[in-house]
Every structure is written in C-alpha cells, then in structure tokens.
Image (cartoon, rainbow, N blue to C red; front, side, top):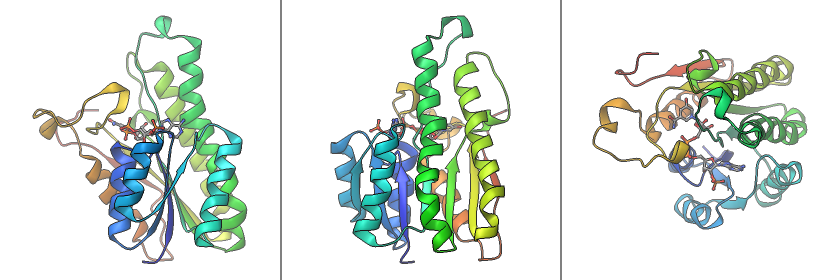
Length: 231
Ligand code: NJP
C-alpha cells in the first residue's frame, strides 16, 4: 500500500503499534502526540513524519492535517487513538480530570475528524478508524468519567459513519478490552499481563483487518478482548 495514515497517540502503547504495523505494510505515517522525543523515535522507525500536537486543541488539530497534506499531498487513513483515562469513585473525581478526559477522548476525536473531512470528501474516499473501548458499551465502578467519555466518543464516530458513507468515506470503530500499555500510568510488560491483557500489536492487527476490507465493505464495529477477560 502507498497510503498515507495519520495515527494519533503514536508516541507509545496502541498508537505506536498501529504506526509500526502500517509502516511495515508500506504506508506513509504521520505520527501525532504531545511527547516530541518519543514521537521522533517512532517517526524514525516508521520513516514517517512526526507532528507534535495536542489533539484537544483546535489549531493543533488543523496543523496536523495541514502538515500531512503539505508533506504527502494526500491523506487516506485517520486513526483516532489518542486517549487518557483515570479511575475513581464519582464523588472523588475533580472537575479538571473530567474535563481532561472529555477534551482528549471526545473533543480530540471530533477535531481531527472535522479537520480531515473536507479533504476526504473531496477525494471521495478515505477511512477513519476510532479506537474506542468496550466501556463504550458497559458501566463499572470507578469508570464514570472515562466511560462517559468513551460513550460520547462512540456516538461521535457512529454519527459520522452515517454522515459520510455517501461520500465514499468509511468509519470503523474498534472496541478493545484490556490492553498492556502505559494507559492510566500502568507499566506494560509484566509477566501476568501475558494472560490478562491484549498486546498493542493485537489491536494493530485488528486495524489492519479493518483496513483490508474490500472497497465495497465497511467493518462498522469490531470488539476485541483477551480470552480471560469477562466483561
Ligand atoms: O494508552 P497509552 P493506550 N494529544 O497511555 C497520547 C484506548 N483504550 O495506548 O501526548 C495528543 O499507552 C499519548 O501521547 P502523549 C484508550 O482510551 C485502551 O492504551 O505523548 N496525544 C500516547 O501516545 C485510548 O484511546 C485500553 O502523552 C495524546 C497515547 O495517547 C487508546 O486506547 C483499553 C494526548 C496514549 O498511550 C490508546 O491508549 C480500552 C493529547 N492531548 C481502550 N493525550 C487499555 N490500554 O487497556 C494523550 O478499552 N495522548
């Protein structure tokens, strides 16, 4: 493939694995996250472009699209993966934590999609992939803010799917269970995680599967869990 793919949250975890796999398949990658050093390392590994940006900032989101188009002349794939989560009883959440989760997970997805859409519509094709969460489909204790943000992100993506299909643009949403990453200040790589968590590369394979659907097929939703996870 000679496609151009923007991957948000590419500095580590799931986004990094997606960037590496798509690059191995020949795609040109635009790596987006706030941490410039880690991003540069991933951009080097993928022979791609690093665009440090905060996805929750409207000017930054537009800058990402402008840089991608300036460098590569087109964009085919947008992976909205950047996300944050913290967990607590509802009464212990600060309003600032609530705002941060909605800013990155919901507004970040909205802003990147909004900025890329004129381009995808004009070229009459493209694929937006959202990394949501299985908690967009269930609630659990300590998950009020994160869960609410993932329900909202899911609503943004499934609304968009209906708005853009007639322009030849696909929207696919992936709903992972537990994945062994730096999410919520975790340290990936513990021996236990082998059984209890998916690997970032498992989600990258799911993205690949979704992207490989024939032109007339769209995978709307894909739920993926470790075999050991009850949900
Ligand atoms: O987490 P982590 P994951 N602007 O912490 C970036 C979902 N998910 O890979 O900006 C731009 O290793 C951050 O980069 P930096 C989850 O909700 C996960 O697990 O440099 N980028 C880093 O690259 C999320 O949507 C699990 O700090 C921003 C990346 O996001 C997605 O998977 C389960 C940013 C986070 O990497 C990837 O998370 C599930 C901003 N403002 C869904 N803020 C799971 N791990 O178990 C953060 O169901 N980033």
